[in-house]
Image 1 (cartoon, rainbow, N blue to C red):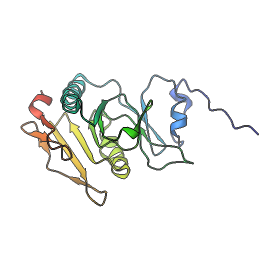
Image 2: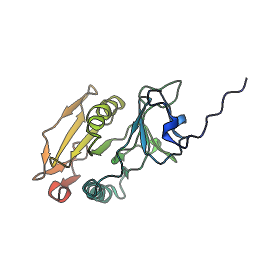
Image 3: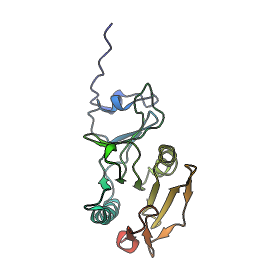
Image 4: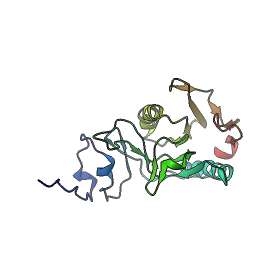
Length: 200
């Protein structure tokens, strides 16, 4: 008996929000809304980011792209699919995220669809409505997947929370960085971000 072909989905209302999905399902979705999968669960992304969110993203991206130009590591900004090796289902990925910014140092993880594996550094910028996802759900899968450093940028408070994996694979929180600080990446000490230029 032939396996059932996966069906193209053109409206998010065709999906069961309580169901468990895989990356193969994700590839068949052709609706307008942007979504992520975290351990098979469907998460709607926030509507179009605010101007402040975009300005912060643009400024951090500019600093990252300049720093990593002609280096072994590469920076990528959203939309960019990252498939994380957590909670796989029958050999298929069930976690697909689109970080605001990520840095990948292993070229073997890059393919035509994005990144297959954990980036070295991920930056997420909070928007109204996504704080729980970024601070709880993504924190957990980034830690489990082995993302070495995770920045959570809070525009409302003008602060960046930084988490770095220790030798046991557990995130350790560093001192919060405020708009008065120059933030240096723990795993790339020469990468410096003047937060006065970010939080304008």
